[in-house]
Image 1 (cartoon, each protein chain N blue to C red):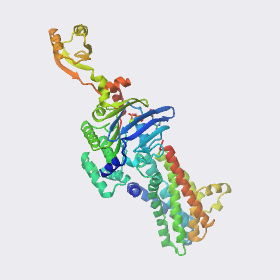
Image 2: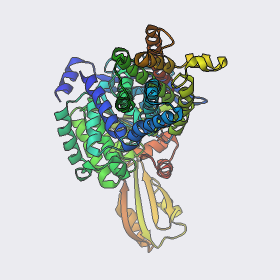
Image 3: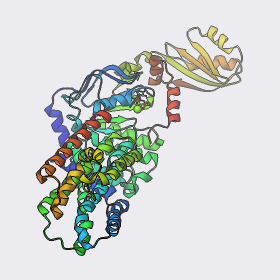
Image 4: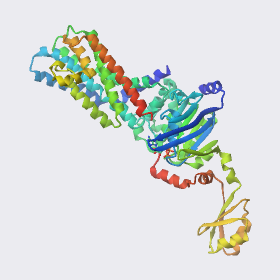
Length: 336
Length: 245
Ligand SMILES: Nc1ncnc2c1ncn2[C@@H]1O[C@H](COP(=O)(O)OP(=O)(O)OP(=O)(O)O)[C@@H](O)[C@H]1O
Ligand SMILES: [Mg+2]
């Protein structure tokens, strides 16, 4: 914490990461294609994109595990493209794969990772014990990492990334492959880290996660950033758009037509036998619709307003249904 | 200071996780003793031959105790990606690789104690030049470890590292003058002998133990040191080229 304050005061600039036109090719594929962005101090920056978009490659270039073919990277004012080691004491990294030491216990793994950053013996034992507690791994702390379940491995890997209290944290798909409760715990922790001043670079394919946590988001597709903006601004175009789903029983065949002629301001579609989707540029009132349907002996079971989401923006911008991308991801299995 | 905390803990972790495990201990201790017994019996000579066998046995136990260790500490860790943590740590690559190898070097120094202590019981070891023997053992240990490092960073799979280290070290038993002088080898093989650092280390051991060195010791020392430095820096270059893509 002291280190963090010192760090903050000693560089009065606002941009912690500044990336200009970085490109990375692997043989014939261009994994990252001339992207530029910056991350402000204290910001939680999200990197969102489908499989193979170039998220991990970007993190690798920022952290010094890969060299960009061209372009510049600066972290904390240090030019990392020339000297990738120079900035490494400023950040922690949680890689996409849980890569701790299988033959060490959870506790020893954490202590070892802290020692890599020069943390003293007493301090690292204390921090390791408290992190095990935070992540609900206290009981498993003395067991070997090799015997952990996938979710436990993921949690320990995240703990290892933050054990030295870095002012900047890279998180590569932190919540992939773990159960709902653990994912919530991790999101909570990420939010806490942000609130205490840690700058965070997060990649994810969970759009809701990005929407809930991030200050700004970059959408990356095929190695290019297609859109980069604050969450509020990203939701803007969808904000003026209202939609509602009405669940009914006793659907009539030509309903869509009669609805459209009766309510010309609204757009209707019937996604399935018992649902009617209504869209409009203005707020939608339920009672006239319900009355109309009941007059035709169609029972209205439920009417639900559909919240605009980043998912819509994402689908709109990238032309990729995020559902499809999520399924691919789950098939692939992600994390480990 | 912080870098040294990292250095020491990497070394300690490797020691605990890999070196002090039963398979390594048996490989480092039992194997040389078995070979020693075999050579001793085969030579058919009396106890006076112990002294001429000792340099070869010491070199042998160092070579076999070090080279294969790097396939675990380096190749295996690269394969399971935990090596990335080390590459991400704020520690210079030179210091990092020294910490990854110094365990093997120390282990290599401990191994020749076995033939040495055994020989002490069998024969009189007075007159040994310890001033030459100890640094020679250290340099053999360093050069064998760095040879193992060179192999470990040049391959991707653990079995490849093990295969290649055997590819080097079994011929080395015969090429480097461990049990037969290099001068007794066929002429076309001798250039290979002089391309291997162990040849020079073994020559010092022969000189230190029974005065049978083929070259001036100062040259032996100089050449083996150059081998150590070159092998280390080539290995670093390979890491930068292959692992920081
Ligand atoms: N070491 C490598 N060698 C060859 N190609 C690579 C390498 N690493 C990445 N790529 C390629 O670069 C592209 C971007 O990969 P990257 O891992 O950055 O994607 P990602 O956005 O992290 O995807 P995911 O969501 O699956 O993690 C892919 O086409 C991938 O095949
Ligand atoms: Mg990835």
